[in-house]
Image: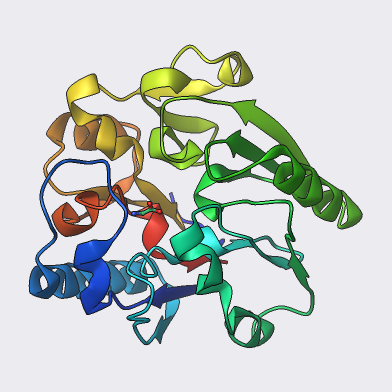
Length: 257
Ligand code: GLY
């Protein structure tokens, strides 16, 4: 397998304030130094997947700002700056237009009363599944669908009620393969997909990240790793233990396009 779909990634270094990030994980506070090391390893993994990585400086006023996936939706035709649904994260979008402008001819915006987190958006070709989480509302979803349609793409909403974000529990690893856990296993929106069911005790690894036919898998989830390996993908493992403490996974840590 070999495919160069994505060329670039944008990441934001963790801020020291990350120890005060939003969390329901109940795994304790992240160790900042360890998080920085893990973040560097993550950047190296993105590079191994063939991406040129832009590394943004930390934003100490925003403890969750390393989870940069939530502030934009990058498509092959435009970038959409979101209106993040958590109050403490809403202003993380500051200055993002200047960064994304370097890579995109067209920048769009989700605006109030719409809210939307990038973690709720799963791109499958030209179609975008939009999770109706506590962070993304119907106005945000409808704005996104209109923007996508104006560029010849499409979107559909996915009802959900348990997980933080859509991609907490379902991720496309291309070739019609989807890693699925929890409430999405029997979800009607995904009934016709080729589902790789992630065991409950490894549910966190449903957020593994396909990039150019390599799959980055969180360290410590052997059953999921083997299932992905058995499908023929090359695996890169990255330890994300400190980001998991803030409910964050591999996809949350970058924008890819
Ligand atoms: N801690 C990541 C988030 O809640 O968005």
